[in-house]
Image 1 (cartoon, rainbow, N blue to C red):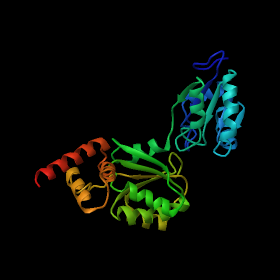
Image 2 (image 1 turned 45 degrees about the horizontal axis):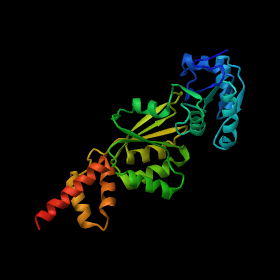
Image 3 (image 1 turned 30 degrees about the horizontal axis):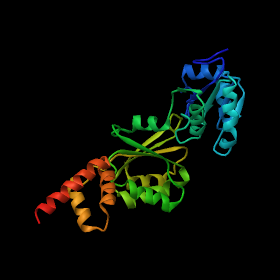
Image 4 (image 1 turned 90 degrees about the vertical axis):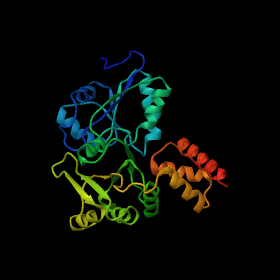
Length: 288
């Protein structure tokens, strides 16, 4: 038996996306591949058995998660080298998107083992598609830090970002996270909270960060959460040249540090901002 791109000498690793909630959200191709491979590496085998039972899949399951990834990886590579075809799945959605797996895939590429993606659900893309915000440019930051200081530091670093920001958060930390957003990014900043995606109680909250605090104080969130922050409507108040001049003249930052900050705030390549800083300096020296 051979699957797609299967080889007689070396097996293939299939990276298979599975439903994030509704079990009907799986492709025909994913069901077929899961039924054809020799082994399925799953984040939680108990969770995966429910999906397998729904579609009549009876294949060996091997646990592969954050805590045993280092030990399992050589074993899986060895099996692939021996000609076995393996599917990698996570608890929900697309493997390696804020989930374990990239080390195994990296090892496969290094060993010349074919890796085939089987696309499907992803909470990031699902949330963005129905959020009603600009998605021309976005940055996925994964799960927010658990510690309050690290989370606040991240928000300060991202404040002024001109791309739509996407985060994962847990219900029990949502209140603290919303309070940080109000303090650091402002009470009037637009926020979308996507909850229980594809499930019975799916919900999209759209409002200001301050309104989100009130809403989720009155009705605490349950289930998985995706937070979406479109760029501030106000945007930067100065152009790049003005912002550079102000920062260089009114702070103790080096040119390199100032360029890095401005490039991040305006979403520009550092090389472009650096050239602008040199031009600015030359212009100022010519007027002396």
